[in-house]
Every structure is written in structure tokens, then in C-alpha cells.
Image (cartoon, rainbow, N blue to C red):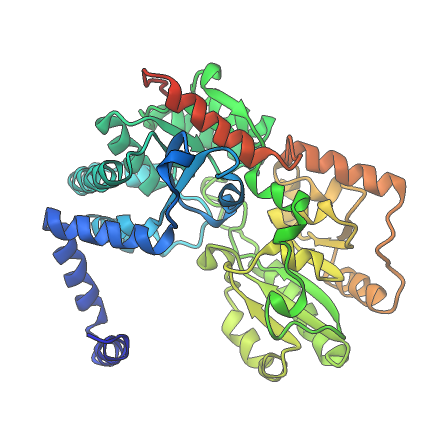
Length: 471
């Protein structure tokens, strides 16, 4: 069947309201036959990977893939390690077949991190067991075809990741985890660490973390210190590898080369609150509204000389402002003439930071990442809720290298000052040092060699004949 015909059928099914049924049928078809599962998994891997001659490598590592690990691909040959990218899509048939009720119930909540309590509810035990069996079949197919020495998982405690790790444990595979959730607040530490200690019973040979706070989270969760290594955040290698940098229209064809560019990192009502504050009903909705009022006002006054790049992350539901549709309708003409450019998580925040003249946001790692540059950073935090819990959030309001707006009018005024040249890219030595100190808290060992150390850890684990750390 041609790609054109498949597209026509999909459009027809969507129009008839049957697309969910068709996708469910496909998942069932794949997951109910070992041979069909094998063909599905191997076709996905062939689409994602290039062949490297086995004589040129010492180790093959199967990495459950995230784009933050892209630097591994550039150094795999020099390290004599074959990096096999395993797309998350290979787990989807089992995930959506056996845990579809969990997905429906849990994933409608706009949070960046979910409590594992719900996932560990006994009503999901049967589905989770089936999903683990499915994952183990997937890993067996991959290991047999590619002679995997060690697997790498990108997270310890995401719901799906927990059962993937348990499947790897059941299969006796060597495992390294590079946990991505490293921007830790004191409130997350307080709430999540005991929960992990209570619920998790998983094993791995090495856990790579990105900073000392990240390490403390897992120590408090009961993971032996000998298994944890502070390696740094792999994506920070970007700042030391100019060959992977993109500029201007090579990022997106509608990025302006003439206008002043403001990069806005969107946030939602529970950003960095998630489930950490118990029964707290207040959220950031009013703060979101103030930000969007200011953005719209700036566009109404200065769209001829300003382009605002509206950046969502990898979890759009988490970052979605509740009044977004109203905002979008009011900003329609600016979207049409590209004065307001909407970009999703597939676009590199690092490239966008480098190519913008001002970075704007609230509680987001994007503002911390901008501290690798001298781009002006505007952080807006105000209101009763903010004043009450600010000391349990990321301490951006304490950084001298950041312009802290303390009201809607203040936010508007700071942005206007930048537009008229009263704020420049020139940092004082005090501001520069403040940014460096903040970077060192969250991005330990950012030296351009984080990915290389990760592959060397994989080689060390692979050459160890016995598997066997545990958390």
C-alpha cells in the first residue's frame, strides 16, 4: 500500500471517528504475535540507525533514545562504541494496549512529573505485568539481533520506565541509567525521595546523575552511593561543539534576521508544583495570564520590530496556559505575519537561546541553560502563592545575572527597556559570576566531555563479566 493511500485511509478514519479503533487494532495486531513484534521492532530500529562494521567497535550499547543524547552519535566511532538508538515507539503497542486505562486517567493532568502512587495502584497490576512481558520480548529481539552488551535507560522513575527497567532486570541485562530529571527543587527532594524509597525495587549497574542535588535525591531514596556517579548533563556538550550549532533560518525558516527576538519559555498552571504541594489548590494560572497580557501588549505596540518565539517543551500539556486558545485568537494576525512564532519541543532550546536577544520565562531549565550565554534573562515571579513558596522553587529570583520582574507592570517595563536599548548583553563581573555559580549547581562537570564519559562508563560496565548493582 502506498504512503499516499495510507494517508487517505487515516484521514478517512479520523473523519469517521474510527482512528482510535484503527490504532488500537494495530497495537493488538503487533503485540499478539512474536513474529509480528519482531518485524515491527527491527523495522523501527533500522529506520533510526546506521550500520557500523563490527570490527571497528568494542561494545554495542542499546540506548532508549532521547534527543538530549545526540552528542553520543558524534563520538561513538572514536570511542569504539556502537550506539543503537531504540525509539520509544517500540514500546507503544504494549503500553497503549495493556495500560490504556492508566493513560486515560493519569495523563489528562497537566503536570511535568506524576506521583507513582497512582501507577502502583493494584488495579493496574495485571496490565503492568503484561507490559513488562511485552518489554522483555522487545529487549530480547534487540539483544539477539544486535548483540547488545549494555542497555541505557533515560529515567529512573517515569511510569513506563519503571517497568522497562524491571523487564531488563528480569532478563538479566546490564543496565546504565542516565536520569534526565536533574533540575531539583527542595520541595521535590522532600516529597519524591521518600516515595521512591517506598515504591521502587529496581536494579542497575550504574546511575549517572547531573549534579550533587540530583545525587542527594537518589541517596535519600536509598540507592547505594557506590552505584551513583555525578557525570554532568550530556546536552551541555552542545556549548563546546560549535559544529552542531544552527543559526537563524536553519533553525526555522520564519525566524527573522531583522527583528529583535524574544524567546519565551511557556509554562502551565502546575509548573514545578506538580504533586509536590499536597492539597494546594492555588496554581500559576493568574501569573500565566499576566505573562500573556504582556506578550500581547508588546506585540500590539512593537510587532514591526519584535518577534516573539513562543517555545513549548517536550510535554505540551504541562506547558499549556489554560487561556491559550483565547490568547491565540487575539494574537492571530501576529501569528500569521510571524511576529509570534510558535515552536514545539522538537526545536533546540540551545539554538534558540543563542539566536535570541532576550530570554523570558518563569520556572524553567531554559533560563538556567541561557546562563551559558550573555543573553539578557528576564524572570517574572509575583503574587501571593509565589511569595509563599518561592524559597522551595528554583532560586532564579536570587540570581544577580537575572532581571527579576515582580509584577505585570514590572515585566512590561523591563522588556520595553530592552527594546529601547536600556538593557544590553553586557554583563557586569558580578552578574557573570552569579550565572556561573547558578550553572555549577545544576550543570556539574559541564566541560564538553559528558557524553564521552557516559560511553566510557558503558564500556566499563560491559567489560565487567558479572552484572549487578541494585537500587
